[in-house]
Length: 198
Ligand SMILES: [Zn+2]
Image (cartoon, rainbow, N blue to C red; front, side, top):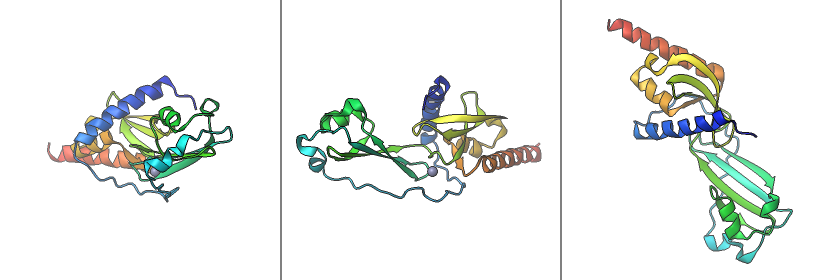
């Protein structure tokens, strides 16, 4: 999948927002998590058995990658053929090639690896804010990066301080409809509160 420049820019914005949010109060989110796609938890064997004792990746090697999404607790596992330039690589070379991953098992035929990603998995519609402070609907289409699906005519100032924190951190829903219902309700609640204090 080709990453657009905007996707990369947004990913940076997301990381910044996540860093800000991490420093703030940890708020619960009220979206209902869908059924777990894959509950596989890979054991981490001791390094000595992972290193493969000088074994090298064969051309028919399968790479098994598990991405664990910490925001929703779901994980996704995919199995791909080893890239051509990895054929002949030993454990050290494979580890350098997959620097973002933790290799759990290594053999000439199979390499199993895992990565924790501090995002929602692709199943969720995630409300967040862009750099202009506008509410946006995003989805994890890259595995490790969110893409904007829709921008709303609401800004952070339309929401209560609590909801602003929630939006800055990002909040996941099962559907776009559920996300938009939340957005409309919270905006209305904020307006009602403002009127009652006038
Ligand atoms: Zn998920």
